[in-house]
Amino acid sequence: MAYEKAIFAKNLTYQMDISKVTARDICDALNVSRATVSDWRNAKKTPRMDKIEKLAALFGCRKSDLIEQRTETGKTVQQKTETGKTIPEKTESKRKLHKYAGGIDMTERYYQPEIECASREQIRAWQSERLVQTVRRAYDNVPYYRNVMQKKGVTPDDIKSVDDLHKLPFLSKADLRDSYPYGLLAVPLSDCVRIHSTSGTTGRRVMAFYTQHDVDLWEECCARAITAAGGTKDDVVQVSYGYGLFTGGLGLHGGSHRVGSLTLPMSSGNTERQIQFMCDLGTTILCCTPSYAAYLAETIIETGARSRIKLKAGIFGAEAWSEEMRQDIQNKLGIKAYDIYGLTEISGPGVSFECSAQTGMHINEDHFIAEIIDPNTGEVLPDGEKGELVFTSITKQAFPLLRYRTRDICVLNREPCPCGRTHVKMCKPMGRSDDMLIIRGVNVFPSQIEAVLLSKGYPANYQILVSRENNSDRLEVQVEMTPEMFSDALSQMSARERELVDALKSMLGIYAVVKLVAPKSLARSEGKAVRVIDTRKLY
Ligand SMILES: [Zn+2]
Image (cartoon, rainbow, N blue to C red):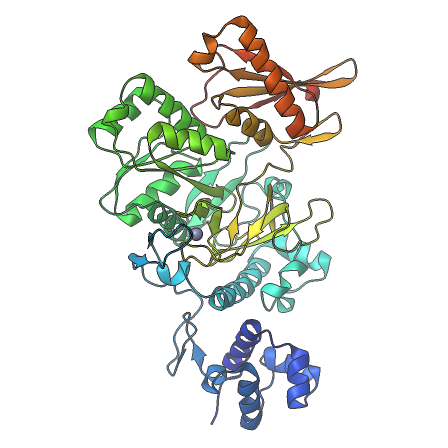
């Protein structure tokens, strides 16, 4: 019985990946050399049928699993079909789950259940196959990748599975800026249909390009997030992220269309109109930055519109927010608030999203491979350790990123999730390695300060001022009081300040000056909040 070398090579690699059988094990069991196994995996040679039988026994699979064409679902078929690019059809479904902690029966919705709940083996097989293709394409089409890989002595032939990812060089934001605008484009510009761009607040803009295929996959990722937040075609989704070059607005907009919800393309700003539409059209899902959600919540309560809103969920991302801020928004609006994560460079929102468990965001691993590295040494850290998040996009055509350093400090969690999704979860970023403030030699993240303020009942309106006085760093935190606190006696206010100083000291390990200010006296932001003013950089 004849069979194809290439198909056998691919199936062999897949079986080795899922069964954890090593090349050494095969050498021992079949009495062959390492070079022979390597030739099999590179489709240079094939073994005789008696060896195939022994291999199948070793893997615990059928003979046909090694010599027949495999589809994306891991099954073998007799006929050849194009593999690799096919994304299973959208099949929105509800799945009843068994009882989990607390004995509550939970019903979870998925946009693409066959992908979101695929087996770990299947996800790994997708990742390996797509990584190999992406590296090959990037090497062939992008001179930048070819150069850096050659410098490191790596060729596409060295990348055979996810296990080889660590061999590739890192890509930094500075590399993206240096390649501005077309340097990393992997397809002809005529194949691109869209660009998005970062705000450029911390330097030169970064521009990202999309083919129609890239836009489609991005929108599917956002549709998964909206569905996970309970969204259906019967929902009214108000997209109050900024539209335009910023990815927030158009990303969730596209996702909402895919789900079939009624989409309100509000963009950010004009709070009065936001609330009016929310009341008149019965918005059920709100998508915006968490700071704008907090601002909207405050205004909704003040204007007495709370009883007229029908919101059930919110999808909030694009900036750091704490667990306390989530509770605050949930309580004020009476909704469930879901986190969403993304970066313009990688595609936009929807790289990862929260499920009903609200214990981290599932990374869409069929499109992005995540790693955690030590930000100083670049060494890959084991799951569960804190470090810098690195992404490799494995399905993007126009702008593939290989080992992109996000600067987000994060932890990955592979514990099974009660929602039924099998994709790895990332925690809320704990700060950015480049946003981290070093104050009197201590690492301080603005998110730590926010957590303290919210735990003491302050609204999420604050500003962190860092300056230099007499050759020493000075940290000041200005915090808005609630109207109730503001009416307290002066003596109570200084007691409150002292309480915050102590709480900050125990969280950060350093002394901070605390100033309580009148409600609504700090500048409000309707886009991304500017929390930190560091004047030390002026010297
Ligand atoms: Zn989950």
